[in-house]
Length: 241
Image (cartoon, rainbow, N blue to C red; front, side):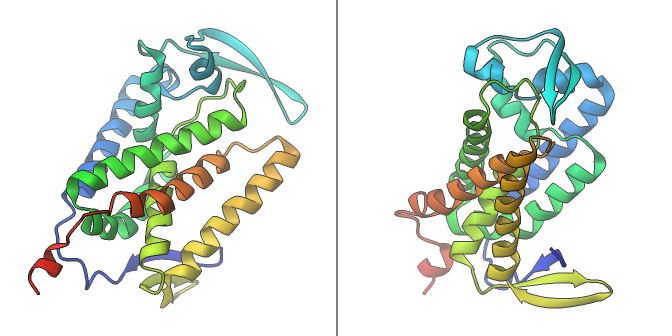
């Protein structure tokens, strides 16, 4: 997209997003654990679709064909049971740009969803979106031995929820040197459209290193779950009327 979100209108938010702050801290701590323990920890605790589908923990050098070229991937021992990686991978990242970009989107868009659902329901929402994202990627390519990691799928769920619950809310975006307000449906509609087109392109080339389908799966889960988990929920501002 030709713009970069840097903030949104929080004037209607009535609660402090404690869970969002906790998620920011958890992701930051996990990132520094990754930096400290290195590739063996990151590789072992990332989600490998083949491992989840077959209930095994691959180790050693494995070979994979990507875009018609063969690459060697070292697989490291993971937790027991290996399904724990479905959760651990949701708090892991592959680079500074990866984590900073994800946490920026988390700060901008997730607080309004926590405000809508409440703290406990939002945490459940976030984790379910992350799991949905992981399973979407796994089911798309169940034999893949390429490790998947990142909070992107869970955060994509927040984006989907934001799109359907706050479509006209103003989002501040940076366009070159200018900052302007753009309706959320343009920003987030453009984001999910980019994921879909990128997934189509990556399916054709078989050479993408980005789990676009995880983004799409998390986004779709967020669209549905924000309505399901909001059932019976009364916001504090409604109670005060």
